[in-house]
Amino acid sequence: QVRLMESGGGLVKSGASLRLACVSSGSLFNVNAIGWYRQAPGLEREFVARIHSSGAINYADSVQGRFTISRDIAKNTVYLEMYNLQAEDTAVYFCHARGFVAGLDYWGQGTQVTVSS
Image (tube, rainbow, N blue to C red; front, side, top):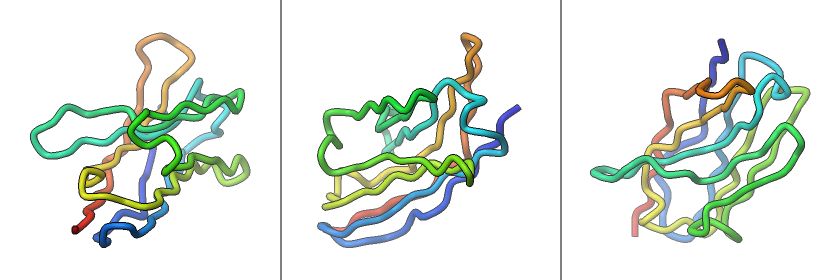
């Protein structure tokens, strides 16, 4: 069982930056990949970014160049640096970990990010 705890959300103005953090209850190498999804009101949850245990990184097209995912292995923590935030980035951001066994997925409780225009 992997437990994930997010932090760092908040209310910011358009153009501002935020850093989200996700702390895992275990080593980041115990999962195949760990990253972020987001869900805006009335919309489906969507992929944002992930970092694989190998270090490979994927981003959604909508955040490429504005968001940066990184990890601190010693702290079992993954970060999402978000720059030049826009109103359309407003959502609940969820930390997600994918296990090495197919179908094993873990989710955090989510942290709200609100961007005012």
